[in-house]
Length: 224
Image (cartoon, rainbow, N blue to C red):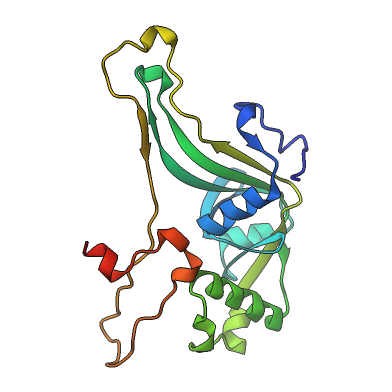
């Protein structure tokens, strides 16, 4: 069950609130892209960042001189959001057009992961999430690279989830308007793989379909 605090209470569209922690995990794991807010020199700044989850914490990483990471390291309160767009709801009236979406908002403070061995483990878990089995074949980060990388984590103790998936909600007076109404779905697909031009001969494409389920598209499907 998700927390219910003053910051996570959804007031607009409260009926779209979802308190299932597994829905929060699914949104983060599918998105892997967060918009992170800071106050920098008195001005609000929102920056998109790659983000991944391990258990009940979310991680972001970057260069040590990153403006975002410098601010977050100081213990600044932040808000980060994840959004998945699932489609347009097309009604008979302009007023009732809307969208299907899944969104998550996380509040709190980031903490710094200092230990290079722990950094290595967490960064490799990220690679495994997007490309299962890949860390067995690539060169892993060395001490210099890990030291140059800032890794921060935030707890999911204070988070909210909002899911919009209702159908058309036209006024009764508009139901006789002779125009199509319904949902225009959006689907994110992954693949097929694209070889780098300098790939050596004889290296076969790996199969990362396990990470993406029905979203995975291979070369045979693309050519249909």
